[in-house]
Amino acid sequence: MTLFYFEGLKIKEKIIESLLALCGGITVLTTLGILIVLLIESVLFFREVSVVEFVTDTQWTPLFADKHFGILPLVTGTLLTSLIAIIVALPIGLSIAVYLNEYAHPKFRLTIKPVLEILAAIPTVVYGFFALTVVTPALQNIFPSMSGFNALSPGLVMGIMIIPLISSLSEDALYAVPKSLREASYGLGSSRFQTSFKVLVPAASSGIIVSVILAISRAFGETMIVAIAAGQEPNLTFNPLVPIETITTYIVQVSMGDVAQGSLEFRTIFAAGMTLFIFTFILNTITARVKKRYYHKYE
Amino acid sequence: MAEKSEVVNFMDYKLTADKVNVWYGNFHALKDISMRIRPNTVTALIGPSGCGKSTFLRLLNRMNDYIEGFRMEGHILIDEKNIYAKRVRVEELRKEVGMVFQKPNPFPKSIYDNVVYGLTIRNVRDKKTLDEACENSLKQAALWDEVKDDLKKSALALSGGQQQRLCIARTLAVKPTIILMDEPASALDPISTAKIEELINELKKYYTIIIVTHNMQQAGRISDRTAFFYLGLLIEYDTTANIFTNPKEEKTQSYITGRFG
Image (tube, rainbow over all chains, first blue to last red; front, side, top):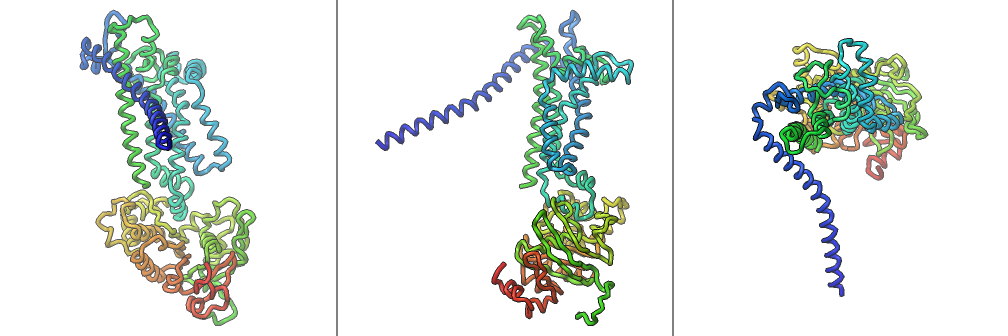
């Protein structure tokens, strides 16, 4: 009897184990599936368009009669909006992190952190309309030549959106710096400002870098804000005042349009998707590397 | 050096604590502490955990200021100046009163940058001045010969004992007159401890040293005077020889013979 009971328990354990493994397997399989589809469609695309043309042509006009397949305008569009976003988000996010960590009263810190995280909870479509209807008109007062669709406005708004990502993760990294370093700095007569920026920020640099890379990844992949406010016009430019298009918005544009499935035009979105994937993959790899170094340091 | 006259000349003392009381919230951590310390001496603060010796040490460079609920009454004079006066800038005070902590806490920077940190935050930029300060401080801390060839190496790569001497060098670089040490050798092995003790003996020529220690033998070996704290009270303060061979108070006697604590 006991033996039988034991066997039953073993079978139950096995079932539970398989179920858990299945859950893990689903995510792996999904990722693999996406990768395979991306790869197959990209290969089919690159049979008709050479890789050299794809990376060197300066025009992206797959939907027009005169077809050009140069990804560069989409890449610069993506880089430009992300760059503007990070220029806004890094100083503000880091200042917030330092303030909360070193200056703010603990009670204030506990109230303000959730409030900041609300910024991350606002739907991006709301941000998009905010960029188009509030920020762009306001900026046009400063730059009268600015087009109604442009990279600057969605870039700035995207920057505001990713502030909590940077401030929250950086604050965690600063908080994790051993208290003894803070004491050493104060003991030598440093002010709070000096302690923050000469000791704590460098000591937490790996964590801060990770937060910035995650924020950049988020900006690369952001779709809605740029789709609404940037103009969907592939433009090889670093001028933030004219309309541009990012990789993500191009994909949306084609997916929602009336392009026939299986056509070359349709396959462009997989090639574009592959490009985006390569970018985020590189960023993820860097993150993993930095994290590894980070954990070694305090072991 | 026995005190001959009844008239106290404050000029003779580097540091004077007068009826100092400290509270953390409702907890009365230090009760009516009065103490005088002569320049170029080593004073050991001993007593069981929670007796207030570390609190007292941290009063001297105002490291308790950040603790929530901290309140203090009484006076602490260094070179006849009240360090808790409103106009005192703690940054200046801490230049005068350096501190070495229990666990070595070098910054995750190079050896060189660690030593000159206290100077760079005071906007000393001249390379020659910094180089000299680095060399002199490391020599004084008896670390120069071990690290002179790789000053650019990370301080975290040093051994625990070397790190602690680096922390001492970092403190010396800003040229304090008083050095506070909070159990500086408790995290170190016997050989490193011996080096630190030797160093303290050497440093006393130029600095006034106040050291918290749990190690009775250490207090006996290195200090000129010893103060025994118990439950927030200064039970006895006398020459180290007297405290260890001829204590006046029964509590001191019990503590140093290891009956409690």
